[in-house]
Image (tube, rainbow, N blue to C red; front, side, top):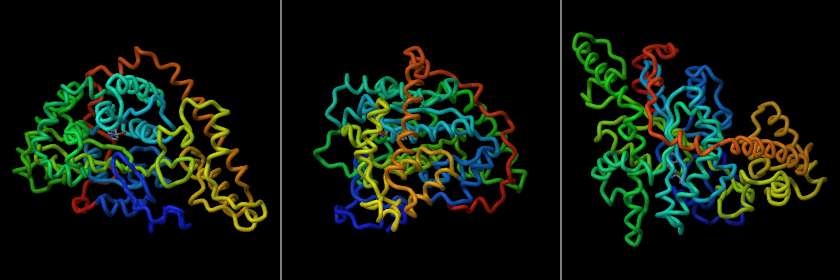
Length: 453
Ligand code: TRP
């Protein structure tokens, strides 16, 4: 059993855990997911490397292993360090008007990455996905998409280098890339990865290609066309020089080996780990389409108030704190519904302390209390019984009320004009990295070539 999973027997213990992009149920064993999916744990070395390369401390989501798994981030950093650009890609399926705190997690992290690396960011709004999977009309998903986009903009993304698109609007631009992905993927492969059944609608079968497409820069000619030209010139030049030179870096090697006709534009996708199947498929087809495989950073799920077993659900108002909740609603929800790992009486709590692994208030603080020292003080006090459940809940209530209030204030300032701007396909020329990116911390050495992460 994973060290992240609660040790206590749970009432529902026999339920088989199931993690797909559409359902998460049962006791999620995060270490096992990494094994099953074939990704890699984020080791302390990678954490240090990210902090060094970006000249910014690692985000607390990384330090606290909330983002805990990855694919190929070392290769992405190798490329970044020699001046190759990358872009960030993330997304949201709009299934309710109001987002909850858990939905903020990937966007808060993406914002940190965007600032740390100063790269373009594309955000896909999969209104089509929700239409196909849920009992919602196109009008409903369109409306939810706009409401959700306002919440996303309120997270503070940089207007100059963020492009937000709804599939329903932007699909024509994606279509050439989607077609190539569809042609390279058989129905058996899709069934193998996603477990589709014969009675599923055929939209579902083709949707994975739609979520995969933004991982390839060809989906965004307005952002990358200029850079692509320059990069292809560079590659040709390098290929010429290569013949006369024995010393090759890994990146140069790749270029020479596959004689690619595509530019080297990398993509990094921060997402919750349940989205990984989409990107396993994407990474499978990438070499055949001559694109770089996207790199990934995976997060754990944000637990429901009722316990760490599942992610929060938009359809159950008591399962989590919503971004539209009032201070009083937040207070009542935490006091009434936040599952406690504390003991049943004050005396027992003082004697035994709380079980932090299942305590939702503590878990929520690991997501939203940035101050490491204060969190550590709470951890020690609560787990040794010097702090009672009522006290940790009071601290959490204040932290969440503040975050939600700030979010609501920022969201009130998001105008339709701004939405339009973020959603307009446009060039991001100035974002093309300068010739000299941050000086490599250490030169690319042959050792990095065998790095399996
Ligand atoms: N399928 C995701 C959801 O239901 C939305 C999504 C699209 C996404 N592209 C993504 C999430 C890329 C993370 C990364 O919310």
